[in-house]
Figure 1 (cartoon, rainbow, N blue to C red):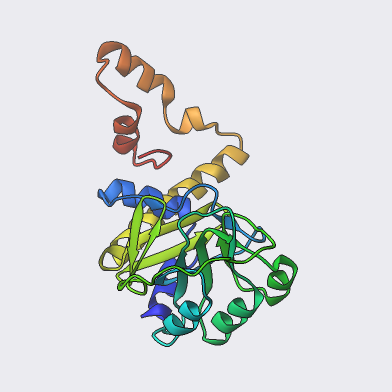
Figure 2: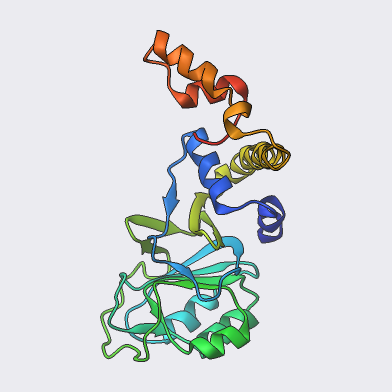
Length: 234
């Protein structure tokens, strides 16, 4: 399944996928804006492997017992900014288990070591100190993870790149990928034309849109673009 996911999402950015979700009426579920790659250019995709951190590293070791190669570890640490919840040793363990990457709603540490390891990792940032607590473990701590306002389960697929992290329902992935590919191809053609001297206003027949709107103020730009088969917005 994860090989199939990698193939379906190859060459598609998170903006392409987010636009496809919007076009299909699928909830656009992004990690909070601060969740970014430890190194620019990192990207990964795979089935979500969710877990909720409670202060001890053993939760990561245990959830990896149920992992499949190609998964992406999704860690819910409640968006805490007072502790790092994992570092280099967990990253190595995750990498050796065949996972594609790690997404944390919280902080990491051991940044220099993580860069040497090279496993894609996305978090809210870094802090030297680890947890100084040990909370009670929820019964569903390896079935679901919060990521901002979203609840992520093993029925979700994760896509991560320089623009952030997007979560998509597994059963909708093929449909999303098809639409995202069409959006990507349209935008690439538009960019090529712009580099060749044809402005975006010309390509979208913007003057025609303004004339139509003057006659009928209810006409929106997105409606105009759909008529032309252009992406840009949705």
